[in-house]
Image (cartoon, rainbow over all chains, first blue to last red; front, top):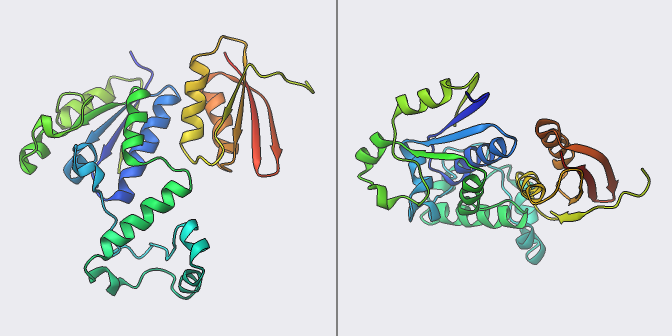
Length: 179
Length: 78
């Protein structure tokens, strides 16, 4: 019987919300906790062969988003610092401008890279190396019309809520995290 | 205690959470029990995370030194 098991439910498919399940999952497994990540609803896109490379960050409806540019942009084009000091975050209205989501996404990816944070595909590999079980949600696959072959290699067979609850409750100390 | 000779050095300069911990775990896997791993980090979060990793996994954190922006950890493999 496992001592500790952690089950993480990854339910969001935006770029920003794809990091926490993968970072916590890979770290927990490295610290000796049996870990599984259950990819459900939009979170299933994190393990979709093509969609995992096109996860986006939406400025609209995200009031906590800071107005910040990658360090390299601040260095090569100092006027952006003035913009950063005036606006606490991108004005919400900007979110409806076509191309703004793609622009914000590329800025975030650049910032993450320059700050030494692993990319989503890299984090998935780190999870696999650390022995994290990656479980795609069967029901979501049906709803979205994704086949098992559309998803990345190295996943567990598709499962449902019962699979996850059974996995985690087999341990002395079960832990669950909804992201 | 003054001079610790490391059997292996891992440089995680420029890398951020969770990479220093994951790379430390991986580096320790190829080492023998009792050997010393030196980890160089620039991520301020590693000051809390590497000791937590050692505590959890039973590897001994022999020494932690801050040298300017760098933090050096000396970990003895369990």
